[in-house]
Picture 1: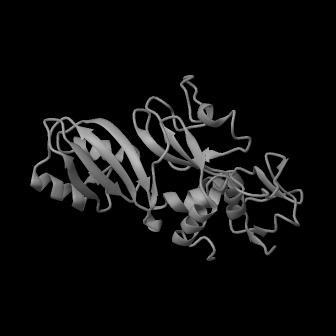
Picture 2 (picture 1 turned 135 degrees about the vertical axis):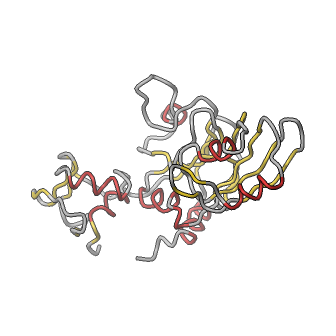
Length: 243
């Protein structure tokens, strides 16, 4: 295999995202052929060189695993939790031997479609706003938005000093506590809840029902493997075969 940047290799084998992989290197936790590497631009060949993280030798996985999970409410989107709450690992650990990790996040009270994988590069690209992968949600809110507020929602709001990307929103079920469908390309923490709160509305229920072309089609707490065709379709969308 050709040489690749080490932070990309670490992402590909599921050690960390590219950004976090760079942090590991700066902390002196990565070595190549016995030499500590701190420069993210350094290249290596995982099939030829001995690349270690915290002293553990990396090996290219025989094949990656891609899962579509329906995360229930009150489950943490992490592989462990210092508070002892149920996390997504508990939903798959008896059925999946590989070390899969969540792609992006769903907050504790939210539910719905969550991808999990061993493929760090896939995770990095699908969560990057630059990839423009739509994430679609349905939300039950404690009061309706006005037409003007819905238009402001579409245009984006200021969130932590930075404007959110344009969004799509439509009313699904008119009621005292209406349901809305929202589509965003970002995944900033609690973004949809904060956007509604900006207009004086609280989200009572939030469910992610679609990521890109992939629809939620398993029961809460269950998961399935993505088909080879679905993986290939994602790879094309994410331009993963392009350098």
